[in-house]
Amino acid sequence: MSTGNDRFRDSARAAESAMRQVFPHTPLQRNALLSDRFGADIWLKREDLSPVRSYKLRGACNAMRKQAGQELFVCASAGNHAQGVAFMCQHLSVRGVIFMPVTTPQQKIQKTRMFGGERIEIHLVGDYFDDTLAAAQDWCAQRGGYFLSPFDDLDVIEGQASVAVEIEDQLGRAPDMVVLPVGGGGMSSGVASYFGDRTRGLFVEPAGGACLRAALAAGHPVTLPHVDTFVDGAAVGRIGEKTYDLLRDTALSDVIVLSEDRICTTMIEMLNVEGIVLEPAGALSVEALSEMASQIRGKTVVCVTSGGNFDFERLPEVKERAQRYLGVKKYLILRLPQRPGALREFLEVLGPDDDIARFEYLKKSARNFGSVLLGIETRDADNFVRLFAHLDEAGFIYRDITNDETLSQFLI
Image (cartoon, rainbow, N blue to C red):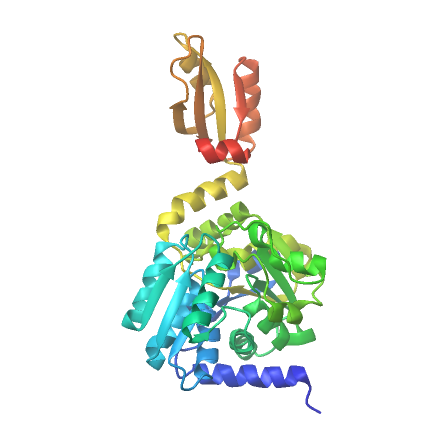
């Protein structure tokens, strides 16, 4: 007797088959670095290598191909869904109206225009995705067209589940675990539904957009009071109703929440060591491995690297965040005596691996002391223990403002 899960798997397989007329499958690659580090068989499902550099093309392809005769599609997107819809508008020779947040990285806006060409128009509305979503839905209600949700649509979910179809075919079986980034829940709910109880799903969210964890804790979808847009591909303030229904039985222990700064360390390592360009959301699944190192040892684990649409103008910020998380860069307010030799005395306190990355007087008119904003980089976080001890011995007055959000926002 056929079950609902069997029917879903059949539908996902049909969706995956139809996609081959539009784009090739993405590779599943074993990663030796991560496998050796964690004593596991770690594979990366490289959705960052799709034609639009994210898995979002899958949902757009499946949903739009099912709307035969529809000539106008409307969507809201933080960037990746927009590119998928634009790509399919060009492929199907239909029109698209795409709403994106004003804060969307320029790289994603430009790529959307490139894929859609004259068949699309872009509206930049709102600072947060949920504001953009509301604007797109209002426009569609007033002017018509088919509104295509980036995640809360059963055809989109079915299309995203094709990721699991390919993983199973490429691996030759279902993996022991699959690590999935979560934004609105389209891909994570689709992949988890396809594998069912054959594979343990682990779900990863950025701290500034942990809408799945909030929904599971409340027992229903809730709207987050604030969303950090840094991980733009997963910065969603409210998980979808349909996606939540598919994920509602997820154990809270299977949801991992990572700080935005921490995610940057994986982005830097993947770029420098592996030559893999990942956007913040695309690095979520890889960074989560260290959270469950004891659980994955000896297991076959697939991490879905969900996207690689990264604007390299953001690289200095990513490096900065990674350094601060690792503790190798700090910012201090130093009270420096206004007398000859004071600066030399401070410089003599620095160790051989300490480097001044920023030096700025904040109040140059002080008669006895001047406040200096210092940025210091070092090779080992433990060097700061020595530095602070030497500053104390020398009688310098200082304040570490690295993790002071208010001061950092205005001074750094």
